[in-house]
Image (cartoon, rainbow, N blue to C red):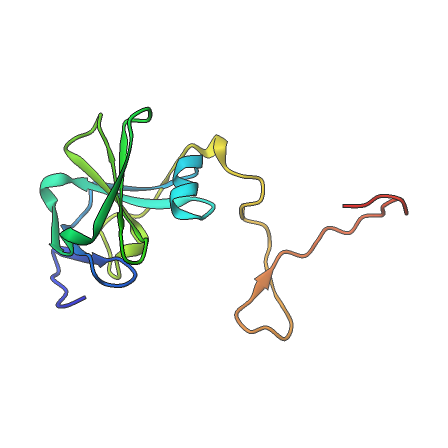
Amino acid sequence: MGKHHPRRSHGSCLCGAVTFEIDVPAFWAWHDHGLKSRLAHGAAYATYVGCWRKNYRLLEGASEISRYADPEAGTIRSFCSRCGSPLLYERTRSPHMVNIPRALFLHRTGREPRYHLNIQERPDWSYSGEKLVSLKGYPGVVWTRPRTRKRPPDEFD
């Protein structure tokens, strides 16, 4: 991703076709548990960094960017057309702000994600801080032990 500038943070998509930078510190960062962000990222939640549009610069790959506009929600989501990485999340009600998936940055952005949006939409299957233990024989894998309970013999999952 090139030279790291201490007052900027660089990011890119998975394949590296699209690269960009922002001035740091970013304005804010948060976790979005909403359905649309989950679907766009294919994950339990998406973590974003928000910055002023004037502090965002596309460095390479403008021709590789595809956009999806959701007029009902008033949002535009941009993706790399080569690898599918989500790149930007824009809201028409906030035209001076761009939101970028935090995972696209290798270095700090100057903000920790301390906020949770749409927490009421958090799926029941997502991790919520349960105690994790190492899975024997699988280095680097942790899991949540099931609760022990007695079930009637005719109960099935």
